[in-house]
Length: 152
Image (cartoon, rainbow, N blue to C red; front, side, top):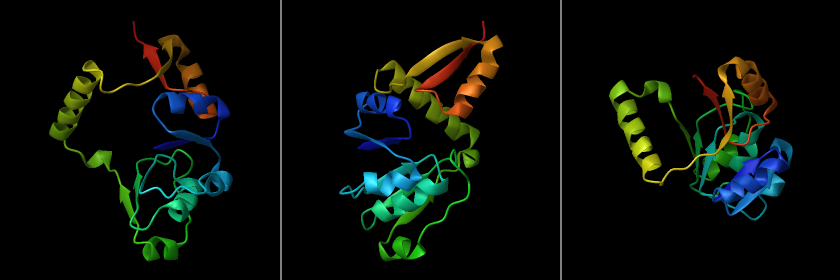
């Protein structure tokens, strides 16, 4: 498993979390950075210009699972690459999940967290009166992990 980030400062954390390698690249450099890797699955929370290099890098029969558009909602890529390689583009529609399935998923996630099977990184816990700082840091993409607000 490889991870991708646009910031060198986040690469070490990605590898500490289990990635074999962290690629530091924006959309223009991503295909070159993936040279030699032919992933079978790519999880894409970014959209925008990141989709095209992933389509080109995927191995035949590969899949892209799209679950966000942090970079941009509009994408461009070569459809010939998609169909000639037999790729699948799958969307995650969290808004389509029923309340029952959402509760079941949350229960499973909390159980995995309790059992130590699921881990996440907390970058910082901020008091509620610093919520604007949290939004600023998210917009600047200067967060490594999760920002949490202390509601006490």
